[in-house]
Length: 264
Image (cartoon, rainbow, N blue to C red; front, side):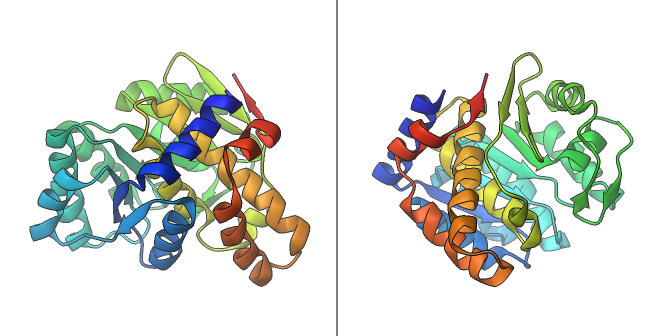
């Protein structure tokens, strides 16, 4: 799948898809800059009165529930309706759903009013969505690898979409198939927003392919390889963050083909 993932990267850089983001305030700038580095065009349009119309002209919609305000929640519902009407993919990061039950209710409401294309979360969050007990602290999780394949598949069946669970080895499922990705470094867990940025990359990748699992695999491999590249140049969080953005900017199809650790 490395070759197909590389083709997704090439397509993003070729067409520069417009990605509507309703994301958390901690990393809104990081998500916008990550999309630009990847070759996409970000638009942080969250107002309830604008979200529907903007979604209809966007290439994909990215929703991150990390700091979900009431305005964002209403905007997210409108964006989902607009994206579904226009046939655009909707990518959701249920950040913090393990600690705040309201986020599960929001996810379930979105699934009732529209169609989700891809859910990307850490292993603890995905286990919570699947109804499995998980060790979650805020937006972080630990010790969640046991049973993650089954939980990811269960969440995919529940929400009728592809689901990606990130961790030491990332897992993607559509309820039947499984993909594992081994790229990445622990330093990605030492900066704020790596998961949020990855969600934005997933939306950009999904904007150029209808294959949700391929989109997730391409985006996760890009982030993992970028993390490896950045860590080779910078061993501390501050300099690593800068090097990470540069590495995302530099990744091309050949990089994916040569360094991607995507296992089907």
